[in-house]
Image (cartoon, rainbow, N blue to C red; front, side, top):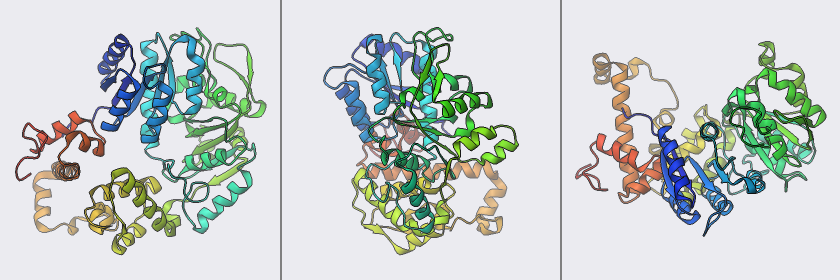
Amino acid sequence: MMPPEKKQILVVDDEANLRRVLAAQLLRDGYEVHTASDGEAGLAMLREHHIDLLITDLRMPKLDGMELMRQALRLEPDLPIVMLTAHGSVDNAVEALKTGAFDYLTKPFDQAEVRAVVRKALRTRDLAGTEARREEAREGRYGILGESAAIAEVFAILDRVADTPTTVLVTGESGTGKELVARALHENSSRRDKPFIKVNCAAIPKDLMESELFGYERGAFTGAVGSKPGRFELASGGTLFLDEIAEIPVEMQVKLLRVLQESEFERVGGIRTIRVDVRLVAATNRDLKREIAAGTFREDLFYRLNVVPITLPSLRERASDIPVIASHFVQKFNARLKKSVVGIEPEAMERLGRYAWPGNIRELENVMERAILFCDAQRVRAADLPLELREGGARASPSAFPPEMRDALGADGLKEQVKAAMSRLERDLIVRALEQTGSNVTHAARLLKISRKGLQLKMKELGLRDGSDKLEQGG
Protein backbone atom coordinates (compact mmCIF):
# COMPACT_ATOMS: atom_id res chain seq x y z
CA MET A 1 0.00 0.00 0.00
CA MET A 2 1.12 3.55 -0.66
CA PRO A 3 1.94 5.84 2.30
CA PRO A 4 -0.73 8.42 3.23
CA GLU A 5 -1.12 11.27 0.72
CA LYS A 6 0.82 14.38 1.74
CA LYS A 7 -1.17 17.52 2.43
CA GLN A 8 -0.81 20.10 -0.36
CA ILE A 9 -0.06 23.72 0.49
CA LEU A 10 -0.02 26.64 -1.94
CA VAL A 11 2.22 29.61 -1.07
CA VAL A 12 1.50 32.83 -2.98
CA ASP A 13 3.87 35.78 -2.51
CA ASP A 14 5.64 38.19 -4.87
CA GLU A 15 8.84 38.03 -2.78
CA ALA A 16 10.89 35.19 -4.26
CA ASN A 17 13.11 34.80 -1.20
CA LEU A 18 10.15 34.52 1.18
CA ARG A 19 8.54 31.89 -1.07
CA ARG A 20 11.75 29.85 -1.03
CA VAL A 21 12.20 30.08 2.74
CA LEU A 22 8.59 29.22 3.54
CA ALA A 23 8.43 26.41 0.96
CA ALA A 24 11.66 24.91 2.33
CA GLN A 25 10.27 24.82 5.87
CA LEU A 26 6.97 23.29 4.75
CA LEU A 27 8.81 20.65 2.71
CA ARG A 28 10.92 19.76 5.75
CA ASP A 29 7.71 19.42 7.76
CA GLY A 30 6.44 16.80 5.29
CA TYR A 31 4.03 18.75 3.09
CA GLU A 32 3.83 18.97 -0.69
CA VAL A 33 4.28 22.61 -1.68
CA HIS A 34 3.17 24.63 -4.71
CA THR A 35 4.24 28.26 -5.16
CA ALA A 36 2.99 31.22 -7.18
CA SER A 37 4.41 34.74 -7.58
CA ASP A 38 1.11 36.64 -7.73
CA GLY A 39 -2.60 36.28 -7.08
CA GLU A 40 -3.57 35.46 -10.66
CA ALA A 41 -1.05 32.63 -10.86
CA GLY A 42 -2.22 31.42 -7.45
CA LEU A 43 -5.84 31.35 -8.58
CA ALA A 44 -4.88 29.35 -11.67
CA MET A 45 -3.14 26.79 -9.44
CA LEU A 46 -6.21 26.52 -7.22
CA ARG A 47 -8.27 25.69 -10.30
CA GLU A 48 -5.80 23.04 -11.46
CA HIS A 49 -4.84 21.29 -8.21
CA HIS A 50 -6.49 20.03 -5.05
CA ILE A 51 -5.08 22.36 -2.36
CA ASP A 52 -5.49 21.69 1.37
CA LEU A 53 -4.19 25.08 2.61
CA LEU A 54 -3.55 28.45 0.97
CA ILE A 55 -0.91 30.78 2.42
CA THR A 56 -0.95 34.15 0.66
CA ASP A 57 0.60 37.57 0.98
CA LEU A 58 -1.84 40.41 1.54
CA ARG A 59 -0.25 42.94 -0.83
CA MET A 60 0.57 41.65 -4.32
CA PRO A 61 0.38 42.90 -7.91
CA LYS A 62 -2.38 41.85 -10.33
CA LEU A 63 -4.60 40.26 -7.66
CA ASP A 64 -4.11 41.08 -3.98
CA GLY A 65 -4.55 38.65 -1.10
CA MET A 66 -8.06 39.77 -0.18
CA GLU A 67 -9.41 39.28 -3.69
CA LEU A 68 -7.54 35.98 -4.05
CA MET A 69 -9.18 34.86 -0.80
CA ARG A 70 -12.67 35.83 -2.01
CA GLN A 71 -12.27 33.96 -5.29
CA ALA A 72 -10.62 30.97 -3.61
CA LEU A 73 -13.52 30.61 -1.18
CA ARG A 74 -15.97 30.70 -4.08
CA LEU A 75 -14.07 27.77 -5.62
CA GLU A 76 -13.64 25.89 -2.32
CA PRO A 77 -15.74 27.22 0.58
CA ASP A 78 -13.95 25.06 3.18
CA LEU A 79 -10.40 26.00 2.13
CA PRO A 80 -8.40 27.38 5.10
CA ILE A 81 -6.48 30.54 4.16
CA VAL A 82 -3.59 32.07 6.10
CA MET A 83 -2.60 35.67 5.34
CA LEU A 84 1.00 36.93 5.38
CA THR A 85 1.32 40.57 6.38
CA ALA A 86 3.90 43.14 7.37
CA HIS A 87 3.72 44.77 10.82
CA GLY A 88 2.25 47.96 9.33
CA SER A 89 -0.76 46.21 7.80
CA VAL A 90 -1.92 44.03 10.70
CA ASP A 91 -5.27 45.84 10.70
CA ASN A 92 -5.84 44.61 7.15
CA ALA A 93 -4.99 41.07 8.22
CA VAL A 94 -7.51 41.30 11.05
CA GLU A 95 -10.09 42.48 8.52
CA ALA A 96 -9.22 39.44 6.41
CA LEU A 97 -9.95 37.19 9.40
CA LYS A 98 -13.35 38.79 9.79
CA THR A 99 -13.99 38.25 6.07
CA GLY A 100 -13.13 34.56 6.06
CA ALA A 101 -9.38 33.96 6.46
CA PHE A 102 -8.41 31.27 8.95
CA ASP A 103 -5.43 33.09 10.51
CA TYR A 104 -2.54 35.43 9.73
CA LEU A 105 1.24 35.49 10.16
CA THR A 106 3.24 38.69 10.58
CA LYS A 107 6.57 39.06 8.75
CA PRO A 108 9.21 38.22 9.80
CA PHE A 109 7.51 35.11 11.15
CA ASP A 110 8.77 32.58 13.67
CA GLN A 111 9.18 29.01 12.36
CA ALA A 112 7.41 27.53 15.38
CA GLU A 113 4.46 29.89 14.83
CA VAL A 114 4.23 28.89 11.16
CA ARG A 115 4.29 25.21 12.14
CA ALA A 116 1.54 25.69 14.75
CA VAL A 117 -0.74 27.71 12.46
CA VAL A 118 -0.36 25.24 9.57
CA ARG A 119 -1.12 22.22 11.77
CA LYS A 120 -4.12 23.96 13.30
CA ALA A 121 -5.50 24.97 9.89
CA LEU A 122 -5.12 21.48 8.39
CA ARG A 123 -6.56 19.84 11.51
CA THR A 124 -9.56 22.19 11.35
CA ARG A 125 -10.19 21.25 7.73
CA ASP A 126 -9.93 17.54 8.47
CA LEU A 127 -12.46 17.92 11.28
CA ALA A 128 -14.74 19.99 9.03
CA GLY A 129 -14.94 16.91 6.81
CA THR A 130 -17.22 15.29 9.41
CA GLU A 131 -19.75 18.13 9.44
CA ALA A 132 -22.34 19.17 6.87
CA ARG A 133 -20.95 22.00 4.76
CA ARG A 134 -22.36 25.42 4.08
CA GLU A 135 -24.01 25.43 0.67
CA GLU A 136 -23.17 28.02 -1.96
CA ALA A 137 -26.77 28.01 -3.19
CA ARG A 138 -29.01 29.01 -0.30
CA GLU A 139 -31.98 26.67 -0.59
CA GLY A 140 -34.67 25.75 1.91
CA ARG A 141 -35.58 27.67 5.05
CA TYR A 142 -32.49 29.12 6.73
CA GLY A 143 -30.42 27.43 4.04
CA ILE A 144 -31.40 24.04 5.50
CA LEU A 145 -33.23 21.50 3.34
CA GLY A 146 -36.10 19.37 4.63
CA GLU A 147 -39.78 19.33 5.50
CA SER A 148 -39.98 16.52 8.06
CA ALA A 149 -41.54 17.06 11.49
CA ALA A 150 -38.10 16.70 13.12
CA ILE A 151 -36.54 19.52 11.08
CA ALA A 152 -39.70 21.64 11.40
CA GLU A 153 -39.07 21.72 15.17
CA VAL A 154 -35.59 23.14 14.49
CA PHE A 155 -37.08 25.81 12.21
CA ALA A 156 -39.56 26.79 14.91
CA ILE A 157 -36.75 27.43 17.41
CA LEU A 158 -34.74 29.38 14.83
CA ASP A 159 -37.79 31.56 14.15
CA ARG A 160 -37.92 32.51 17.81
CA VAL A 161 -34.26 33.00 18.72
CA ALA A 162 -32.35 33.99 15.56
CA ASP A 163 -32.66 37.75 16.09
CA THR A 164 -31.80 37.73 19.81
CA PRO A 165 -28.48 37.92 21.70
CA THR A 166 -29.26 34.65 23.51
CA THR A 167 -26.58 31.95 23.79
CA VAL A 168 -27.47 28.76 21.91
CA LEU A 169 -26.14 25.22 22.39
CA VAL A 170 -26.46 23.02 19.29
CA THR A 171 -26.15 19.27 19.78
CA GLY A 172 -26.31 16.38 17.36
CA GLU A 173 -24.28 13.67 15.68
CA SER A 174 -21.39 14.54 13.36
CA GLY A 175 -22.62 15.50 9.92
CA THR A 176 -26.06 16.74 10.98
CA GLY A 177 -25.34 20.40 10.11
CA LYS A 178 -24.46 22.16 13.35
CA GLU A 179 -22.47 24.85 11.53
CA LEU A 180 -25.40 25.44 9.18
CA VAL A 181 -27.58 26.20 12.22
CA ALA A 182 -24.94 28.53 13.69
CA ARG A 183 -24.74 30.45 10.39
CA ALA A 184 -28.53 30.58 10.17
CA LEU A 185 -28.67 32.16 13.63
CA HIS A 186 -26.10 34.76 12.58
CA GLU A 187 -27.43 35.55 9.11
CA ASN A 188 -31.01 35.98 10.33
CA SER A 189 -30.08 38.38 13.12
CA SER A 190 -29.30 42.08 13.29
CA ARG A 191 -25.63 41.02 13.50
CA ARG A 192 -25.63 39.66 9.96
CA ASP A 193 -23.32 42.44 8.67
CA LYS A 194 -20.82 41.85 11.48
CA PRO A 195 -18.21 39.05 11.72
CA PHE A 196 -19.10 35.38 11.97
CA ILE A 197 -16.03 33.75 13.55
CA LYS A 198 -15.86 29.98 13.93
CA VAL A 199 -13.41 27.97 16.04
CA ASN A 200 -13.13 24.20 16.09
CA CYS A 201 -11.90 23.64 19.64
CA ALA A 202 -10.75 20.09 18.82
CA ALA A 203 -8.19 21.47 16.36
CA ILE A 204 -6.41 23.69 18.89
CA PRO A 205 -3.68 22.28 21.17
CA LYS A 206 -4.85 22.63 24.76
CA ASP A 207 -1.85 24.78 25.74
CA LEU A 208 -2.76 27.28 23.00
CA MET A 209 -6.51 27.42 23.68
CA GLU A 210 -6.37 30.53 25.87
CA SER A 211 -4.31 32.59 23.41
CA GLU A 212 -6.51 31.43 20.52
CA LEU A 213 -9.74 32.57 22.19
CA PHE A 214 -8.51 35.64 24.06
CA GLY A 215 -5.37 36.75 22.19
CA TYR A 216 -1.96 37.60 23.62
CA GLU A 217 0.44 40.49 24.18
CA ARG A 218 3.98 40.70 22.88
CA GLY A 219 6.35 38.61 24.99
CA ALA A 220 3.57 36.64 26.70
CA PHE A 221 5.35 33.41 25.75
CA THR A 222 8.19 32.19 23.53
CA GLY A 223 7.42 33.08 19.92
CA ALA A 224 5.00 35.91 20.78
CA VAL A 225 6.93 38.49 18.74
CA GLY A 226 3.92 40.81 18.63
CA SER A 227 0.45 41.17 20.10
CA LYS A 228 -2.49 39.40 18.48
CA PRO A 229 -6.25 39.60 19.05
CA GLY A 230 -8.15 36.44 19.94
CA ARG A 231 -11.36 35.12 18.43
CA PHE A 232 -13.57 36.87 20.96
CA GLU A 233 -12.16 40.27 19.92
CA LEU A 234 -12.51 39.43 16.24
CA ALA A 235 -16.16 38.44 16.73
CA SER A 236 -17.13 41.56 18.71
CA GLY A 237 -20.40 42.92 17.37
CA GLY A 238 -21.06 39.62 15.63
CA THR A 239 -21.28 35.90 16.37
CA LEU A 240 -18.67 33.47 17.73
CA PHE A 241 -19.27 29.80 16.92
CA LEU A 242 -17.38 27.41 19.20
CA ASP A 243 -17.61 23.93 17.68
CA GLU A 244 -16.63 20.87 19.72
CA ILE A 245 -17.04 22.91 22.93
CA ALA A 246 -16.43 19.81 25.06
CA GLU A 247 -12.76 19.89 23.99
CA ILE A 248 -12.04 23.06 26.00
CA PRO A 249 -9.90 22.14 29.04
CA VAL A 250 -11.62 22.41 32.44
CA GLU A 251 -9.16 25.09 33.64
CA MET A 252 -10.04 27.23 30.59
CA GLN A 253 -13.77 26.81 31.13
CA VAL A 254 -13.61 29.19 34.12
CA LYS A 255 -12.36 32.05 31.94
CA LEU A 256 -14.94 31.25 29.27
CA LEU A 257 -17.69 31.38 31.89
CA ARG A 258 -16.48 34.81 33.04
CA VAL A 259 -16.60 36.17 29.49
CA LEU A 260 -20.14 34.88 29.02
CA GLN A 261 -21.27 36.43 32.29
CA GLU A 262 -19.38 39.74 32.18
CA SER A 263 -18.46 40.22 28.49
CA GLU A 264 -14.86 41.06 29.41
CA PHE A 265 -11.42 39.44 29.64
CA GLU A 266 -7.67 40.12 29.42
CA ARG A 267 -5.31 38.89 26.73
CA VAL A 268 -2.64 36.37 27.74
CA GLY A 269 0.20 38.39 29.29
CA GLY A 270 -1.93 41.54 29.37
CA ILE A 271 -3.43 43.65 32.14
CA ARG A 272 -5.90 45.74 30.13
CA THR A 273 -9.51 44.57 30.42
CA ILE A 274 -11.19 44.23 27.03
CA ARG A 275 -14.95 44.43 26.70
CA VAL A 276 -16.74 42.70 23.83
CA ASP A 277 -20.28 42.29 22.51
CA VAL A 278 -20.46 38.72 21.20
CA ARG A 279 -23.37 36.39 20.55
CA LEU A 280 -22.11 32.87 21.35
CA VAL A 281 -23.25 29.70 19.63
CA ALA A 282 -21.65 26.47 20.89
CA ALA A 283 -21.93 22.96 19.45
CA THR A 284 -20.99 19.43 20.41
CA ASN A 285 -21.69 15.84 19.41
CA ARG A 286 -21.10 14.67 23.00
CA ASP A 287 -23.49 14.24 25.93
CA LEU A 288 -22.40 17.16 28.14
CA LYS A 289 -24.32 15.86 31.17
CA ARG A 290 -22.25 12.71 30.95
CA GLU A 291 -19.10 14.88 30.67
CA ILE A 292 -20.19 16.76 33.80
CA ALA A 293 -20.58 13.48 35.70
CA ALA A 294 -17.08 12.48 34.54
CA GLY A 295 -15.64 15.78 35.78
CA THR A 296 -14.50 17.00 32.35
CA PHE A 297 -17.08 19.76 31.90
CA ARG A 298 -18.22 22.38 34.40
CA GLU A 299 -21.88 22.25 35.35
CA ASP A 300 -22.14 26.05 35.72
CA LEU A 301 -20.74 26.54 32.20
CA PHE A 302 -23.19 23.99 30.81
CA TYR A 303 -26.19 25.87 32.22
CA ARG A 304 -24.78 29.18 30.92
CA LEU A 305 -24.43 27.71 27.42
CA ASN A 306 -27.70 25.77 27.44
CA VAL A 307 -29.97 28.82 27.51
CA VAL A 308 -31.58 27.73 24.24
CA PRO A 309 -30.81 24.12 23.28
CA ILE A 310 -31.22 22.98 19.67
CA THR A 311 -30.95 19.24 19.08
CA LEU A 312 -30.43 18.32 15.43
CA PRO A 313 -32.02 15.05 14.30
CA SER A 314 -29.88 12.43 12.59
CA LEU A 315 -30.61 11.74 8.94
CA ARG A 316 -32.16 8.36 9.81
CA GLU A 317 -34.63 10.24 12.06
CA ARG A 318 -35.69 12.40 9.12
CA ALA A 319 -35.51 9.81 6.33
CA SER A 320 -38.43 11.48 4.52
CA ASP A 321 -36.06 14.41 3.75
CA ILE A 322 -33.53 12.21 1.92
CA PRO A 323 -35.11 12.55 -1.57
CA VAL A 324 -35.09 16.37 -1.52
CA ILE A 325 -31.55 16.54 -0.08
CA ALA A 326 -30.20 13.95 -2.52
CA SER A 327 -31.83 15.75 -5.47
CA HIS A 328 -30.26 19.00 -4.31
CA PHE A 329 -26.83 17.34 -4.36
CA VAL A 330 -27.48 16.11 -7.91
CA GLN A 331 -27.94 19.73 -9.02
CA LYS A 332 -24.97 20.92 -7.00
CA PHE A 333 -22.51 18.36 -8.37
CA ASN A 334 -23.86 18.62 -11.90
CA ALA A 335 -22.73 22.23 -11.84
CA ARG A 336 -19.43 21.57 -10.06
CA LEU A 337 -18.44 18.50 -12.12
CA LYS A 338 -19.92 19.72 -15.42
CA LYS A 339 -22.31 16.77 -15.66
CA SER A 340 -25.91 16.53 -16.88
CA VAL A 341 -27.50 13.89 -14.65
CA VAL A 342 -31.24 14.56 -14.51
CA GLY A 343 -32.23 12.60 -11.40
CA ILE A 344 -32.08 9.41 -9.36
CA GLU A 345 -33.65 6.09 -10.36
CA PRO A 346 -36.33 4.74 -7.97
CA GLU A 347 -34.22 1.69 -7.01
CA ALA A 348 -31.26 3.92 -6.13
CA MET A 349 -33.50 6.27 -4.14
CA GLU A 350 -34.93 3.28 -2.26
CA ARG A 351 -31.38 2.24 -1.31
CA LEU A 352 -30.61 5.79 -0.13
CA GLY A 353 -33.79 5.77 1.97
CA ARG A 354 -33.14 2.54 3.84
CA TYR A 355 -29.44 3.11 4.63
CA ALA A 356 -28.63 4.08 8.26
CA TRP A 357 -26.33 7.06 7.37
CA PRO A 358 -23.91 6.99 10.34
CA GLY A 359 -22.18 10.05 8.81
CA ASN A 360 -25.52 11.84 8.26
CA ILE A 361 -25.86 14.62 5.66
CA ARG A 362 -22.13 14.90 5.04
CA GLU A 363 -21.95 11.18 4.21
CA LEU A 364 -24.92 11.58 1.85
CA GLU A 365 -23.17 14.52 0.19
CA ASN A 366 -19.99 12.49 -0.33
CA VAL A 367 -21.95 9.53 -1.70
CA MET A 368 -23.80 11.75 -4.18
CA GLU A 369 -20.58 13.51 -5.28
CA ARG A 370 -18.98 10.16 -6.09
CA ALA A 371 -22.16 8.85 -7.77
CA ILE A 372 -22.48 11.93 -10.02
CA LEU A 373 -18.76 11.88 -10.82
CA PHE A 374 -18.88 8.33 -12.16
CA CYS A 375 -22.46 8.19 -13.45
CA ASP A 376 -22.50 7.63 -17.24
CA ALA A 377 -26.29 7.45 -17.57
CA GLN A 378 -29.08 10.05 -17.40
CA ARG A 379 -29.97 9.09 -13.85
CA VAL A 380 -28.05 7.82 -10.85
CA ARG A 381 -28.51 4.04 -10.67
CA ALA A 382 -28.17 1.65 -7.74
CA ALA A 383 -24.97 0.40 -9.41
CA ASP A 384 -23.46 3.90 -9.04
CA LEU A 385 -23.79 3.74 -5.24
CA PRO A 386 -21.15 2.34 -2.86
CA LEU A 387 -21.28 -1.34 -1.97
CA GLU A 388 -22.61 -0.77 1.55
CA LEU A 389 -25.68 1.03 0.13
CA ARG A 390 -26.27 -1.54 -2.59
CA GLU A 391 -26.25 -4.25 0.08
CA GLY A 392 -28.53 -2.27 2.36
CA GLY A 393 -25.84 -1.56 4.92
CA ALA A 394 -26.02 -5.13 6.31
CA ARG A 395 -22.87 -6.72 7.67
CA ALA A 396 -21.80 -9.81 5.79
CA SER A 397 -21.33 -13.00 7.80
CA PRO A 398 -18.72 -15.59 6.74
CA SER A 399 -21.48 -17.78 5.27
CA ALA A 400 -22.47 -14.88 3.01
CA PHE A 401 -19.21 -15.23 1.07
CA PRO A 402 -19.11 -17.57 -1.92
CA PRO A 403 -16.99 -20.73 -1.44
CA GLU A 404 -14.08 -19.41 -3.53
CA MET A 405 -13.89 -16.25 -1.40
CA ARG A 406 -14.09 -18.22 1.86
CA ASP A 407 -11.21 -20.31 0.57
CA ALA A 408 -9.25 -17.16 -0.28
CA LEU A 409 -9.95 -15.69 3.14
CA GLY A 410 -8.71 -18.84 4.77
CA ALA A 411 -5.59 -18.93 2.63
CA ASP A 412 -4.55 -15.27 2.58
CA GLY A 413 -6.09 -13.79 5.71
CA LEU A 414 -8.00 -10.57 6.30
CA LYS A 415 -5.15 -8.09 5.72
CA GLU A 416 -4.27 -9.52 2.32
CA GLN A 417 -7.91 -9.54 1.23
CA VAL A 418 -8.42 -5.95 2.37
CA LYS A 419 -5.27 -4.87 0.54
CA ALA A 420 -6.41 -6.60 -2.67
CA ALA A 421 -9.91 -5.09 -2.40
CA MET A 422 -8.48 -1.62 -1.82
CA SER A 423 -6.23 -1.97 -4.87
CA ARG A 424 -9.21 -2.98 -7.00
CA LEU A 425 -11.25 -0.04 -5.71
CA GLU A 426 -8.37 2.42 -6.23
CA ARG A 427 -7.82 1.13 -9.76
CA ASP A 428 -11.51 1.43 -10.61
CA LEU A 429 -11.77 4.99 -9.26
CA ILE A 430 -8.60 6.12 -11.07
CA VAL A 431 -9.62 4.56 -14.38
CA ARG A 432 -13.05 6.20 -14.22
CA ALA A 433 -11.56 9.58 -13.26
CA LEU A 434 -9.11 9.41 -16.17
CA GLU A 435 -11.92 8.46 -18.54
CA GLN A 436 -13.99 11.34 -17.19
CA THR A 437 -11.17 13.85 -17.85
CA GLY A 438 -9.93 12.50 -21.17
CA SER A 439 -6.83 11.01 -19.46
CA ASN A 440 -5.72 14.41 -18.17
CA VAL A 441 -3.76 13.44 -15.06
CA THR A 442 -3.85 16.94 -13.52
CA HIS A 443 -7.64 17.23 -13.80
CA ALA A 444 -8.15 13.62 -12.66
CA ALA A 445 -6.01 14.29 -9.58
CA ARG A 446 -8.16 17.31 -8.71
CA LEU A 447 -11.34 15.22 -9.06
CA LEU A 448 -9.84 12.55 -6.80
CA LYS A 449 -8.57 15.23 -4.37
CA ILE A 450 -4.98 14.02 -4.39
CA SER A 451 -1.78 15.54 -5.79
CA ARG A 452 -0.74 15.04 -9.40
CA LYS A 453 2.46 13.37 -8.22
CA GLY A 454 0.50 11.10 -5.89
CA LEU A 455 -1.79 10.05 -8.75
CA GLN A 456 1.17 9.36 -11.04
CA LEU A 457 2.77 7.14 -8.38
CA LYS A 458 -0.50 5.33 -7.78
CA MET A 459 -1.00 4.78 -11.53
CA LYS A 460 2.51 3.33 -11.80
CA GLU A 461 1.88 1.05 -8.82
CA LEU A 462 -1.39 -0.20 -10.36
CA GLY A 463 0.05 -0.63 -13.85
CA LEU A 464 -1.94 2.24 -15.38
CA ARG A 465 0.96 4.41 -16.58
CA ASP A 466 3.32 4.05 -19.53
CA GLY A 467 5.39 7.22 -19.09
CA SER A 468 2.81 9.58 -20.61
CA ASP A 469 -0.48 10.96 -19.33
CA LYS A 470 -2.40 8.20 -21.12
CA LEU A 471 -3.75 4.88 -19.94
CA GLU A 472 -1.90 1.74 -20.98
CA GLN A 473 -3.50 -0.20 -23.77
CA GLY A 474 -6.19 -2.41 -22.35
CA GLY A 475 -6.08 -0.59 -18.93
